[in-house]
Amino acid sequence: MKRVHVAVAVILSKSNQVLIAKRHAHLHQGGKWEFPGGKVENTENTEAAIIRELKEEVDLQVTSSMPFMTISHDYSDKQVLLDIHTVTNFTGEAKGNEGQQIKWVTITELAAIDFPEANKAIVAKLQQQYL
Image (tube, rainbow, N blue to C red):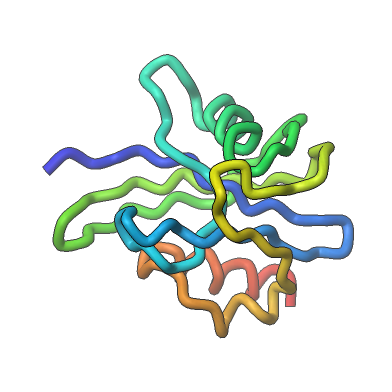
């Protein structure tokens, strides 16, 4: 099984809220919430993928991102390598460009949200660092 390299953005607002998006039902882990991002193309590094994906998915113009952590996770049907960056330098008003539901939540609220298994370590590290 090929491991999918995914760029994931933890987008933090000035008030330390985090942007999350709900996965469409037909997608892998559909119906769960996630941190925005997507596959890293062969010609891109992680930061370039984050800049492209956030423009496409949530209409934000990202100036820069900082590496946060990486997670390698095996689902029964898919293997993922999540390359997670924090994003604090961006402009624009977030909206679900692909018809997905999005919302800003506090870091405390993340614990009660239904995320794919691979995302739970991100939530734990955010809570460690910011709470």
